[in-house]
Image (cartoon, rainbow, N blue to C red; front, side):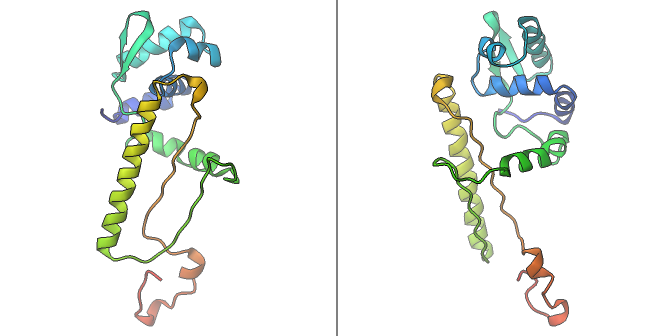
Length: 178
């Protein structure tokens, strides 16, 4: 698997229907199901497939079967056009929830860690994302009716809550991390 190039990202940003069509394909949807569920005609779907093939995102086979060439869940460039265009939209849309349903989780846990512990945490996050993607790939073969669209949103960085940082004595010579 590979990531989209900056040029590919820019083309997808300029054609949101193409971007959504690609999203459905990488999540295991057939072309006929995309046409059934969304506002794409058969002619438009074939045009989308052709554009995506020319873009180098997929290989097109007879009967509109495809093989995706771009990674499903880690496909955009860090700080690339897609991320810049959709970061706030994704964040706001995803966080617009009470996270109260049985399959939902929202966890925030601040802490202060050594470099060794930070390295372990990063590795565990990387492993969680790999497992998430592996399960998504495996479940893509299941009927759509038995699957639930989900998102995993993880943020981990050096951080001090601004209200705490604002009270920190800058000239005290203390630890700037809280």
